[in-house]
Image 1 (cartoon, rainbow, N blue to C red):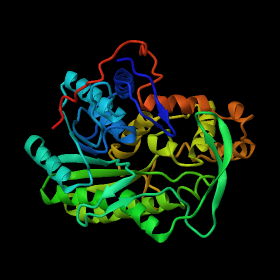
Image 2 (cartoon, one colour):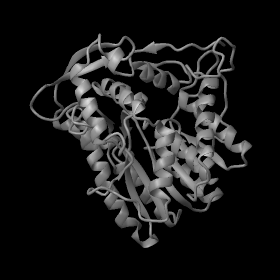
Image 3 (cartoon, rainbow, N blue to C red):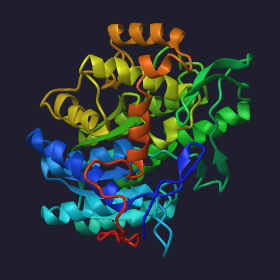
Image 4 (tube, helix red, strand yellow):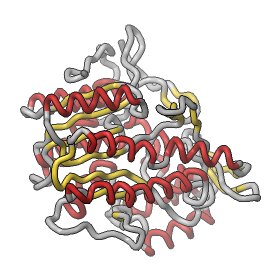
Length: 397
């Protein structure tokens, strides 16, 4: 079939298998171009099919020849219907890993569930024995709690008494407008923490450790975001930020539990990037379009793969204890948060309108990155050519 992007709001309903494959190959080539990494050898990536999780899996495998197990929840293809992009990404990754002689297997299911945890642990025990790195990179709007059976749903809302009002942009049309969001109630805050906080990360680490599947000196890393003052009301000081506070606090709890195997738990604060999740957060698309413009002009722009390669080579696997901030977090958002970058973005924010954004922002770069998430607008792919949507993941367990 010939596959074209079909949009509905902040989501693309189709994905292109060849475009997703090219995107994965481009990331692999970037990692290989940077040279070998003296890093992990047996890696579990929870949330392995898109964004930072996929980039972490690629960096582990093609940077340090690691065997990888990926866990994700993706929609498989059906005749005449494309899979979700993460399905095609994972198929492409595994095919490239097999060509390179690397172990790569995947489990498709709800990572919050006991069933998927058990299946993953059984696979690790059977095939790898122990692992030395666990990446936790889940992004989900809902979580069925495995112990209580309660379905928790997260919300993107500010916290406090006042309605939040600020600028945002429809990145499809370039229209800059004001948006108002009512604050979250306590139940919504608690539900968001239940979905996006650190409880599930800790459950994974407890399960792995109790089965003796963590090697001596094993590391685990979860991903977070802080961001600038213009987004903090809806992000860092909102419901998501409260969940990230919980995630970051959980790192200390896990650290204590790993002491007897000389293990370490870290939270890495990453750069703002175009993801399926960030595209749905009001205010963030406008901020990212301005940020991209500034960082590209300064020659310090990074995508997911550049961020993860730098995380591994400059923070996690240097032979020294990773440098952290006063809250114990690794800051790979350091270039984004440079004062010269943020001062410029803050100035541009005040100037942003429908008329000025094409000049002061990088909306084309935002749109391209968004389409790339789904395998579209990738250089070197013929989108007029028929492609087979029925792609299999070779190492799916």
